[in-house]
Image: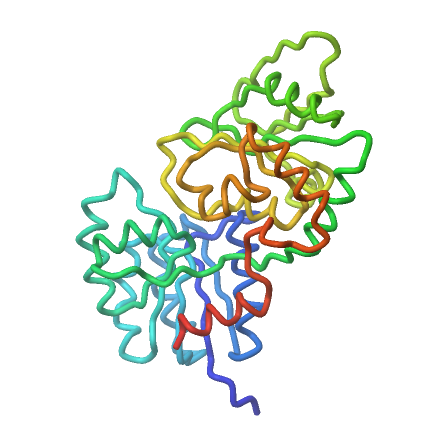
Amino acid sequence: MSNKFKLLLIDLLHVDGGSLEDDISSVNLALSEDYKTKYIKFSANSGFLITLKLYIDVFIFCPTKVIFLSSRVNQLFIFIPLRLFCKCYFIYHFMPSHRYTFHSYALPFLAIFYKIGVYSKGVSNILSKILGYAPDILPSRIIDADASLDKLHKKLFCKHVNLMVPGVRPGVRNAIDLPTILTKINNLGIEVDTVYIQCKGEPPEYIFSGNGPNIKIFDYIELSDYLKIFSESLFIVIDFDRSYEVRASGVILDALNNGNIVITSDHPIVFDYGYPNTIVTNLDNIDVIIEKIKNSKKNNEMIVGHNFKDFKKLWNIYLN
């Protein structure tokens, strides 16, 4: 019989193929070495039946610790009684601007019963003003930086490369100035063959002088196809909307693991990833970063992320 303590991982806002799936897989993988883990998930529109179902699951599994890896803040009030039986934790992902007043009152109360963790330094800074202390900053994804750098080296020496613009939609990520970006990349001696643009609604129109790249527009695709585009692309171009609240970025984390250079601007989200002096950089600095990558045989801080060992260590500190 296993002597491991039991740890229940709960996802109350599950979306098939969403970025949280990879995050939760990383957490489960790292913590299953020290805990007997169980993962349960509910979709965001499951309704009130999840309350009863979750309480039943908790009492059957009898965990020592429970982590809400995703949830609405108001849902956490319903599960405060769990604190009578086990230690409770939850991950706070971002502060919604339209719910700031409610959250600023709710979080200090919830912190009496739950230990709060975050995936972003920016979110920790926001909560420190509300709670009076900075919550633990946890990695959400295991990053194999050396493997990613190897992928980058191979892509940089290809004659033709691809570029991807993920998830363009109002209030989140803006359309980009593709002609200017391609001109800069071409001036570095790199030819972009295909541009993939993921967007909802009317796709952007671009005018090129001379022959332009092959542009492929798509909306929803299967996760395997989505990651295939990452693996085949050298550049990922992101322009976060200024109204988009600070949080960890699943798109950037995908790029960190797939050997991509992220071209972006100085939104608060990107500073968690070493912007602009890592592979998460801006157009003005792109030539410097490419030169550093070509001359780097090891990661050398070009890719900011936590490997399995560090990931596991930080999560175990949080859970103690």
